[in-house]
Amino acid sequence: MGDFVARGYSKQNFVSAPELVADHESGGEPLFAGLTRRHAYITSKRVFDIVVSILCLPLFLGLCCVLIVLNPFWNPGELFYLQRRMGKDRKGFIMLKFRSMTRENNIKRGADDPLETSRITPLGRWLRRSKADELPQILNVLLGEMSLIGPRPEVFSFAQTYRSVIPDYSIRESVRPGMTGYAQVKQGYTDTIEMARRKADLDAFYVRNMGWRLDLYVLAGTIAILYAPCKTRQ
Image (tube, rainbow, N blue to C red):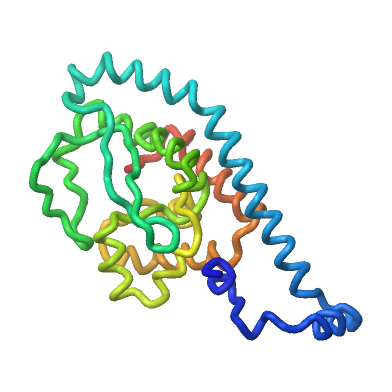
């Protein structure tokens, strides 16, 4: 129900069968037709997520092997970084990344604090710029916790803060979070509450208009970012 409310549906939209017939006869579109199309989109998107993630598994395993060899020299520590993020319907989950920063036992970064760039390791800097650090999230996709495209999952505690100060922030939590998203393509990395406000607006636009046309736009934009050799990325 959260998905429908986010796209502008409400209980008042669920009319009786005679009203649907009348709407159809008057040239309008029955609500059931819209719901059927949305169901087809959600189903096909999930199939796309699974197929692409399975195809990426050999790349993921190969990069794991490379990092196991290189990490002791340029990125000492664990292979993966695990962090609790906010998922669909406000359910927390553990998101996977290749670790790109030095380990800190007492991290005190808040929702309005900048990224601690001094902790990024030499190899971690390449992982972040190439976005290769995000590749382990195909496992989150296969588990159904994420999608390839959707609002980026926020740090759990940050999301709780943003929800209290940003109107309609919870709209982005009505769908599966994504490995890439409309806000990432349009805005990029955010590390302040003011930037998070803009990000929330972009995410809300995506949720209200999500479909294959918008997903293909995000996918094309993501590929352009990945293969822009002269563009600085965080």
